[in-house]
Length: 240
Image 1: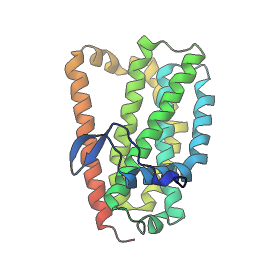
Image 2: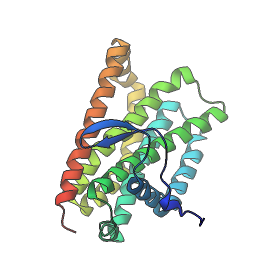
Image 3: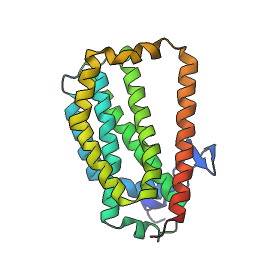
Image 4: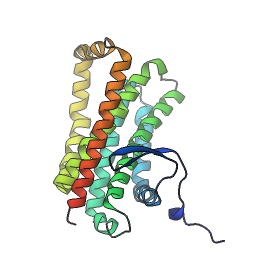
């Protein structure tokens, strides 16, 4: 028997697989989907490692968990913007659409890859903080959950706008995000510290826990699913 190429391997794992508007629990990742995600990883592995290194270095600074995780979520957003800009510069869309995969699979792989990358960067930050002994899990779970939600919310808004407005939107968005990261975010954060974040944390903590978490989870899932369907529709109509 010959040796199997990595792109021919069918991954047998349990995941939530989005298919025709429904969430279906399946035991096998579609081979084309796995191939597309593997392609994304191979193409962006150097950039991903660079972002991981930056995450580790920044996380080791003596900064509060909520500020650290908020900044790392911005890094995850920056990674998404920079990778799609790279695809546009190299005309990767022309090559990808010539492959035997549907545009729905292309879009879905984009969503899954960038969500996984964002969650991975945030997870790395939590691990580094824990190793350094600067993490209190009873306090950090809230900022961690918020950082994960921010990544999903950003991608849910970004991808439909990107498929609608095109490469220029990604370039403008990347510039705007860098300005936000290094100019606006520090100012807003320090102003929020002085004013106890305008009472927003206290208001959230005063709400019943289970209805709040359930509502946020359901709203996030609905937003993500609606975003994915819009992106698939826009990309299917796009002329390359």
